[in-house]
Length: 573
Image (cartoon, rainbow, N blue to C red):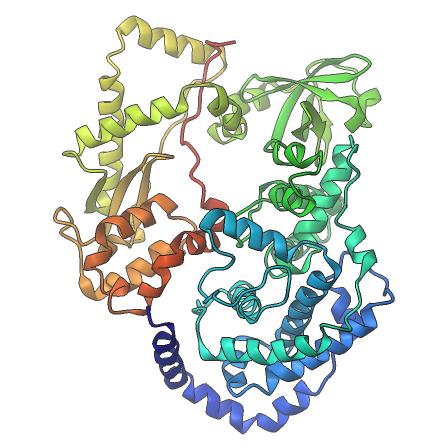
């Protein structure tokens, strides 16, 4: 693949598209020049640090930040970058790139962890770029190009900026010149390094969780991503609930939820996985960090306590948990059995720990009935059932039934108004394929009733409000799923709704949307790429070598499919 030609073609196209903006910028060049003369100060630099007070090395790196900023704004194509980034973002980018230099010098193992994990997945250190001359554990122009690409596609999401463009590569070369001059003199930041360490004998989940918090929300590499995502949500909470006395409850719950659930755009990994990698696989707590469970948050019944544990029952599922008292300071306030508790819990080193916020209320039969009939509440513990029940086997049965129902195909195209009926009839077809006797069906219903589950009323959704046509796809890792406005991404014989003129936009929506599964995107690529202009005549062909990396980047929190199976009844208890 001729990357140089792709880069040149994209540059020419981009310059044409932004020419009007360029002339506007040129007309305001004096104002922009004055703005860009503003220096970066220590407070700007500390925004990307896990500490608040200046250390001995920070002044040196602030100077490098300003040199990096000068390199960025004096680049030949700097006006293109200024189309996408504000003056604040330029300062932010300079601090971001300089933090990479500090990271390599200080051996904090943040960037190198990304390189190692990428190499483990794809047998190369980085996506996109030529790596014939690449030196691990040192600074590289390819690293800087990638970091600029990552930054620009994370701080703004309106436009996707391809990685191999002249303004990215030329900016990276100029920044590399700054770093080359600093390489022999840049000091190690030992204080920074201390924030990424964990005692090998640590038993306290909260100490480990603090390190994960540091990695996700106070580390430069993830600052444009998970840190900004957290801050945006916090601002939203403050705007919505700023006048409420318990606003800290909502802020604390949001932070803990985000820490446990969020995936980074880089490799779609959780904070616990990055933390384990930064510490290294030789660290005694490496596996313990990776094995931290998903967080269960919801309503529980208080069932008693002893000297070591609090006994609680998840209301929706009926599952019982022993919560270690090491993690809970309110056990003395719990007197009445079957009091209702709202809390979050997570498993660390084979013990369940309190994680998040807590409140208590008296027993209420209506609340309990509603919880037991809430599929969303039951889904909070799905991962526990999927670990021990035959979920994979059930998905195989559903997949085979789907193909039998759909003339042997994994995907069905139809008018949106027919999707509800298709899914309903398929569900009936699958249930009938199990060949359960009337007695077995009644026993299953009885187990659910004893568990307090009486079923939920399913309401049809008007999919035609989104698109006139849609599709139903069976994801072998998740189950049946519905997608709208992407039919023209599938030039298949059984798809009468394919329109080549709409194919580029439909493919981009399929790839970039977090709502559409990785498996559906890969189905398109595996079966349709040869017949889609986007992957042959368009810039999309350059994505194919790194498509899994990009799908992780684009789909982030939903890259991994979750089985759409929720168990009811207590047959196996």
